[in-house]
Length: 365
Image (cartoon, rainbow, N blue to C red):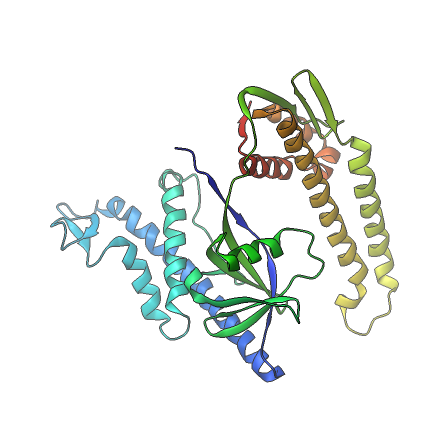
């Protein structure tokens, strides 16, 4: 049976809702400590999972050794003192006891085990290396750790407690659906699943996962919309004898190349910028223009994918067929300029996400 729900992840900035600077700094230092312990625990977990999975390969040393990865109490051939799921959790909980909440370690262990099982065939064949985690990785926690989620009209912010640390959201000029999703969570209309906390440059970002109902549109599975990605036009789609070209090469590249040219001029001029606070001050304009390019690309890709899905809905197309994708990717690889300035994979990711949300089946030819 097809699932009627879809999981969305959003990025929301948080502020520690404490009165004094010292209290806010103490809370932030604690979050950084949890992040560090999760980074170390994650590397330990995947190492133990790999050894457990490959332990049967080590038994050329002796014969007759038991190697079944189950609890010895449940199976006489088992070599574990507890269930396999519990082994990695106990390793990290014993090592970091009192330094990080156990809920974080439990969710981290479960997440990495699911990821490891998914990639197990590639690990076994040597086609994939183990995950290596960065020090600034986001750490997970369960929805039960969030309490007292309310909307404060005076401060125009959503407030809640995470492990008894008070936070409030900073949505800024929110043009997405973050506010609407949080309002629906408070009303009980949307389910809040596991979340992550990401720390970057002294800022706190909350990455909640929302489970929402798919959009209900009148679609016909027998109506097929054929879309192709090309260099001249980002997307060309046909359905019901109707054809639509979405975007043009000039429209997409003109602004992006203009931003790149401005960034190059800023890099040249940085050598003559007034100093005083080191390289960060000199490269301020360069960094700003770099962010401008990535934001522009994300916006255009969002617009193109939105127009494509709206076209399918308008024509009641229940199936979207993407044609010649591999040919276009290979063509882009041959031309360095196109590969540098086009965004096939990002565009496909946005199309698949919006299609799933609308209940449209995607077929890649």
